[in-house]
Image (tube, rainbow, N blue to C red; front, top):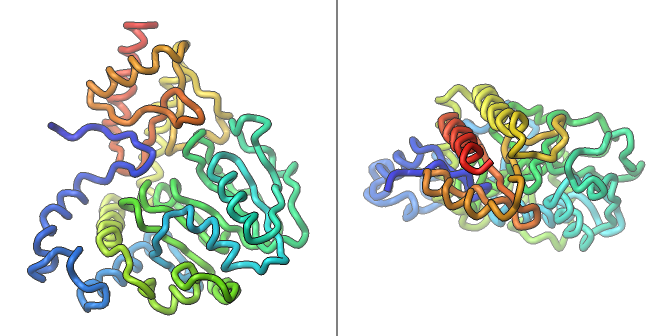
Length: 360
């Protein structure tokens, strides 16, 4: 079977070039006579590869020297607990900006470890937009402010980060990292699950400012302790070596393709094509405020939900996979991360037009 256009929200599509490279090296990595999955994470070949991957990521994102880059496990969801454990004590509070499902989950997990102030919760608007920052109820004594840059379920994304208090900004960038340039200096902590734009599930990238490394509670587990993992080059325990290896290949691919600026230009074009097809139709609809529509996750609905199964069946037969919307939202959702070529979006738009002609 030929490869399909995979619109999965995560684990998401990987660049074909990266997969072919991994295929070529699978049995004999760097002339070691064994797979990268079999070499020691403390051996010179992998240690050098890991260091090189960090250098490339730093170059791509222009990460300043006063930030550490960690390659951890547990997905972004583990960081929902790791962040308060590393940045606060139990008597402190943090502000949470909730603009969707993942922000809601992050706040709920944080409540186990400190006092959470919901600075904003967009639930009243069904998370179809981002409330004006002038209405946010920020605390004067918050230890940090947490927000999710892109909400994959509803398709809401911050395209600009508003000026806020002096408290460090903590951002879940699971769907955003590598999709566009970011100003790392705006943030105290950035974390991202790999399974969107970085690599396979099981790896999490954490970028943390030096002055926040020594605030962890004594009971913080070592594998989630930013200082401990920084001091051990993310190898206090055995890291997910194959995932790290693939992430390194993705970093090289992004650099070869022109870097995050080129990714941003491509992603903007892809999103605009898809939203244009939706907006110009009286058949498809997208409820999200246009000012904060996601470049990465584009939900849309049909005139009658009874047609969803037919759309999914026919689109799958046309080589367009994983378009089913999240169970909390329904409808369709096209996730168009870096690895989704523009030709894939073109194919989806053409299918949508043909489907509307047949059933509209």
